[in-house]
Image 1: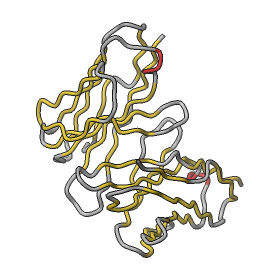
Image 2: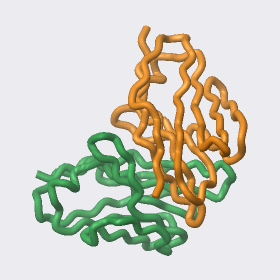
Image 3: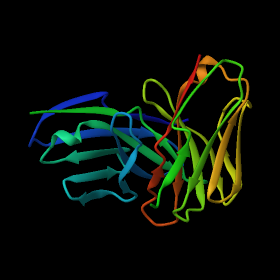
Image 4: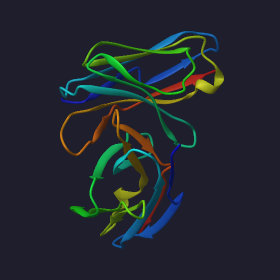
Length: 110
Length: 113
C-alpha cells in the first residue's frame, strides 16, 4: 500500500513564509508533485521533484529527500490569493499513477 | 483555448439513474484519467487510459465504466447511481514531458438524491 501524511491546516499572514511538509510511504516511487486547489476549482500543477534537492519556481519552491521519504513546499511572500488547499502527490512507476495526500488547507490572513 | 473540458459542470440526479460525464482534451496528451474527490477533498484515482487503452483500473464498483473513443476523449458512465456516488469527478490528462504535470478539467459536481 501507500500513505502520504501532510498537515490538515496551516495559517499564516500576508508577506510571511510557510512550509508544508509531506512524508510518504510507497513502493515504486518515481517522484513527488505538488498541486494547488482553490475552493470550487480544479487542482493545478505546481511542481515535480524526481531527484533530491530544491526546485524553485518564483515564490514557490519544492524540496525532496528520497532517503527520508520526505518533501516540502515552501511558499514565500504570501499573498491572500495563496489561500487554497495544497496537495502532495506521489508519482508511482509502472503506469505513472499519481496518488494524492489528503491536502493542507492554507489560510492567509492580512 | 487549450484545456481539459468536462461536461456537465453540475449533475443532480435520483438514485438508481444512469448518467454520463464527458471529457475532452486538446493538449495532444496521450494519457487521460478520472479522479473522484469526496466531501473531505480526498482525491482518488479511478481509471486511466493511454492512447485509448485502459491501463489503470482501481478498485471501483463495476457500475462505473469508462470509455475512450479516441485519445482526446474519455467518458465516464455510471449505472444505478447511489447516494455515495455524490462527489466531484475530475478528468485529467498528462503529456510525455519531463515534469509529469497533470492538467485537470474543472470538475463535475455529481449530487445523487
